[in-house]
Length: 165
Image 1 (cartoon, rainbow, N blue to C red):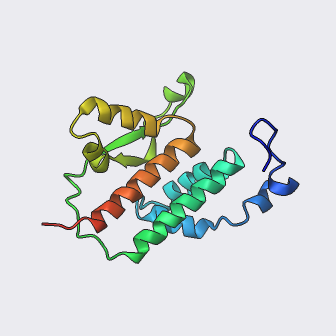
Image 2 (spheres, helix red, strand yellow):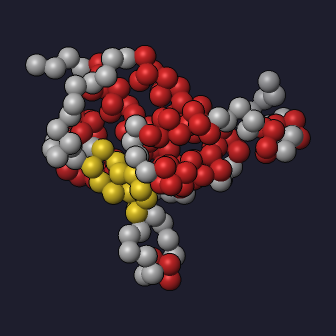
């Protein structure tokens, strides 16, 4: 490994993106997203944002982290049905230029951020919760959506591992 002040070695071996990201299985990613989003067209849009655009390392990392977490969830018994009316979620805003934002009915992604786990982490402090939500939902789509998917899957994982009663 070169010392930190030296340039990084060439990555990806000069391979085209189609080969570098050849390990991405869209159907597998879709099954993870299906736990969160029912509409196939919305999932296709989310997949494109997560693994079809942006830097190669983000695309690959998003796929790896989301599918590993999906595998963990698949190994656990299903959680008891949650009271979805009481489940708090916040919309995830699309960062759009003003001329596009004015033309859309909704400037939000077809996925919302569940906040129950974040509320516990914020210990009831609304400002902390708001800061967490801002940090998780800001930035380009491959960042913001990956953050939201990971939090949603982690919250499901917590629900399955936390004893009820």
